[in-house]
Length: 125
Image (cartoon, rainbow, N blue to C red; front, top):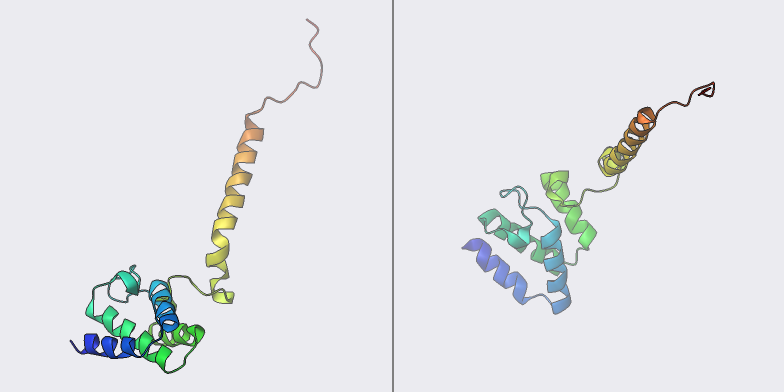
């Protein structure tokens, strides 16, 4: 009930532009209770508290990056649905490309191995 009251008070103070920012952030931040659901889709009490906190921070003048950073500092990188691109996450971002490259190399190697090797001397038939 407290989260609902806070959300209503915070929402009443937001302009349409700020409300749009809040909805965008709710789609980028993961509910820590639901595991893989964004805040915008979660019905958990914790998600309601987090949505109210987003609106409070927007009303206080925080930028989107500052709000993401606040939740990241509080809950870790897991809370962001899109991981941040930094040295610790390079492998995460590069893995799809590396897997694709490895698969293409394996496919190329298998294809070459399956081709018959031409004879060094021509047949005298």
